Structures are given as structure tokens and as C-alpha cells.
Amino acid sequence: MKFALLETTPLLEQLESQIARDDEHQVVFSLSDLNQLDLRALEQTGAQVVVLGGPQEEAVLLRAVEALKAFRGTVCLAHPCTRAVLTAYEVERLAGDALGLFVPLLPLLHHPVIQEALTASIADPLIDVGHVERVEMQRPIQSGHAEAVFDLFAQDLTALVALAGPITEVVAMQSGSETVPLNVQCTTQTGRLVRWSAVRPSSNQEPAQLLIEGTEGRAVVRLNEIGQGDVATASGVQSFPPLDLAAICAASPHAAASAVDWQPMTHSLEVCEAAQKSVKRGRLVRLNLDGHGEKTAFKGTMASLGCGLLIGGLVLLVLSAIMLNVADASGFEILASWINKVPWILAGLMVIFLLIQTLAYVIPRSDEK
Image 1 (cartoon, rainbow, N blue to C red):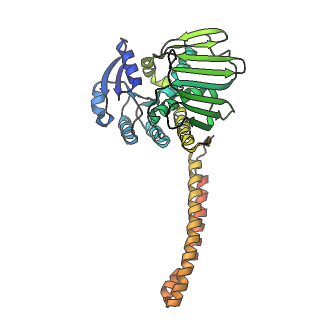
Image 2 (image 1 turned 120 degrees about the horizontal axis):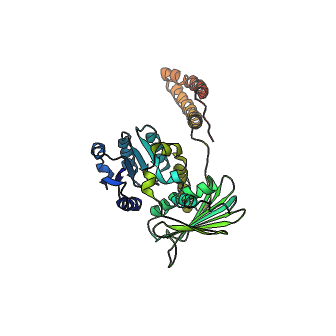
Image 3 (image 1 turned 30 degrees about the vertical axis):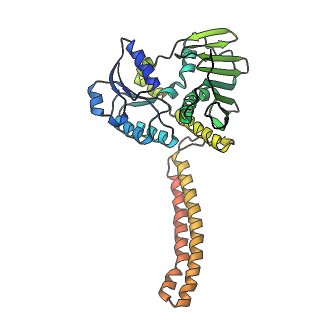
């Protein structure tokens, strides 16, 4: 399989090193600046899979995705490729018009740690846990830029949500002005508890530790610096190898297409955005998990327009009454006659607005959660 790697990130460096040790795959195109992306030059290399690293600036990312829509192979997007929820929705919309297949890489797997833990052995290592009640993840991170910390949080959320379900409430806490330590506590739609912590690294500490508590027991997933780790349960310890990124990116497009789900990506960004707001405001933030279908958007737009029309109409009536008194007192009969028509114009606008509401019945029904 021939790969094209766009941008330079730790994930792509790991992928490139794996490809270098694999006789079945090779890197035929590499680019460190998306602003210089030339689709024709990329296609001339014979690349079959494009892996786009992230995160990117919104304008640069959208231009790159727009250009890659004409690529007939598979495009794997590292997550998070953007920090903005609306940009993620726009990327999903553009991906839907692509000639090839766009895959949000890590959300597709929910998380490499969990996926490899579940597939590395014959027995499910989490079978002793039972019904999951609480999930905690701890990440040792050097104090750095807040965006880098929240990027890692958004990436890990795909695993936490896969285990505990969609998140509805978020509380994030920091100690003073330092980025680390950071504690984010969440409640899911089903009442399960989720906690993610960024802590300062210490000696003999794994890069990540995930605790899963259930009705029948607990499991602890530990990782080392190369992504290799083990799952410890009451039945013992089971080890699993590092994630084979090359094999996943080179998977059958048909198999990937059936599993493509953008919701974990967009939801993790929504939770990440809520956590940042919680840190700034110092209080709990609730998420609205209503659907984003056409009917929901139509109702929201009509509600906004209706409020604007009512407020604007009241202001216009007050101003027209004042101007009418001034016009009558000054003898401007023509102006006064035009001002007298304002209530009828407003009434006509109200009738038109009410008639527009019937368009909701024209919108096709969809399953909105």
C-alpha cells in the first residue's frame, strides 16, 4: 500500500516508522505544509492512502479537505484535526461529497488503547468488569500550552465515551494559572461517571493509565512510552502490542466505510469546548445532545427570527408614534400618511412569518436524537 503523509505530527512519525519496518507498505509522498498541497502531484505518486495530521488552522484544513475531495483513495484524518466544533461539521459535510472515502482515524477505533486491548487476546479482558459504572483516565503531561493539553483530552474522550456513553455535564478544574494539573469530571447520559486528569509526570509512571470500574469488578489499562501495555483484571494481566497504524489505515475501504462514524469526533470536541468554558467560568457546563437535523435547524432559525421580528416591531411602533406626532405638528401630511401605514406593514410581515412556519411540514423526516 502506498501512503501520503501530510504534516508532521507525533502520530505521523509513529506511522512512518512502522511503514519503514514493513515490506508491504511505503511512503511515496510527504508534505509538512498543507498550504503547499498539490493534488495533481500527489496523485502522480500513485498514493492510495492519505493520512492528514492535526490539528490545523481552520482555513488551511478546509482548503486541504476541499482539495482532497477529488482524491479517489482513502483519506484518514488524525483526531483532533480541528479545535472548532463547527469546522468539524463542515469537514464532515465536505467529506460526504468526496469521490473517495474520508475516515476520522482515532474516533473510528474509538481509541487504539481499548481497541487493541479487546482484540489482542481470545478472551475479552473487560468481561470481568460487568456493567461499566465509572471510567477514569490519568495522563502525565509536562506543563505546556493549554491547547495541547485539551487536544489530548479530546483525543482520549473517544475511548471514554465508547465505554461510558455520551457526556451531558462537564466540570473542569485547574490549580491557579498552571495548565497542569487539570481535572475534568463528567456525567454521561446514562448517569455513569467519567474523569480525566492531566498530572505532572513522575519517575516510573506510564504515559497513560485507564481505570474501568463496573458492577462485577475493575480493570486497569496501562501504557508505556511506545503505546504498548497491559490490562489488569481479577483474572490476571493480559498484554497487548502497540497499535499497528499502518494496517488500520490500509484496511479495506468497504470495511472502513461501514464503520465510519463522525459523531465521536464532533462530540469529543463539544465536550472539550465545554471543559474550556468550565475552566474559565468556574462552574458546571451542560451539553445539549439534541439532534442537528434540518427540522431542528429550521425551528431554531424561526425562533430567532420571530424574537427579532417582535422586538423590532415594538421598537418601530414606538418610533413611528413619535415621528407621527412630530409630522402632524409640523404639517408634513405626506410623511404622516406614510407613517400611518407602518402598523399595516408590520401586520403583513407577521402574517408572512406565520405562513413560513408551514414549510416545516415539507422537510423530510429523519431520526433525530
